[in-house]
Length: 312
Image (cartoon, rainbow, N blue to C red; front, top):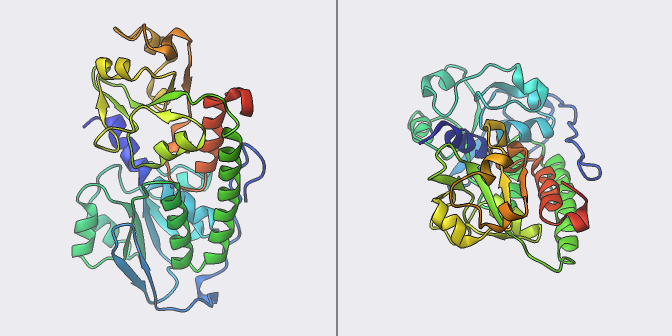
């Protein structure tokens, strides 16, 4: 599997004001001041229950989305280490790094964490479970799942009230986008490109993930929605047959450019190419199921329906 796609998988492991707003980080009181009822049991996205005896003071975050959630809840000062991709907010960049898509579970255990946040990728979850570590796994399939993960982390950190406020703000903004998108008279067909390292086998967004949800909310049709996997690979023939009206380049920061897409063999007949409807997007906003996902929704809305939301 290719480096770019592995980077995406690592990223998938994620108060707002107005369109294009930013995450507001609340101050973090000491965990010892918590009035939450511990021991506390919360179920993760695997269906596995995690019980904490006290508010966690040493957190290892092995997913950028989890790191962003913890900081947005005002508990970033409790994180003792992260994965290599956790780079937001700025404070996260200075934290000790444990590796990219793979790391040694012993490195994590040596930090004596009382909470580990990670995604359901690779062998790490099973290894940490076998070592009896306090592991909570993220695997949101849609935006509702993202909301649920934020609230779950809020409960674990004794920040449930803040988490629910954050989700309420996110939900209001995303629902506002959905309501406005319903005014559109067209439903453009959208190809969300994840990784085009091999133009003959392009990773795209398929069904049962929050990118698919975003496209639907914003008034589009995901041309990969009928695929058997969340992130399938499509060849030129499959893409031409699906005739996307819009191509969104989530691999823009890896070098994908609209002019390159337009020059791909066999793509000339695709409506998006004919009409030059090929747009880059900040992949962190749409590949990290965390607080900034709302910014990704708003950015996507401008791409799919600029007549309603303004230009991209």
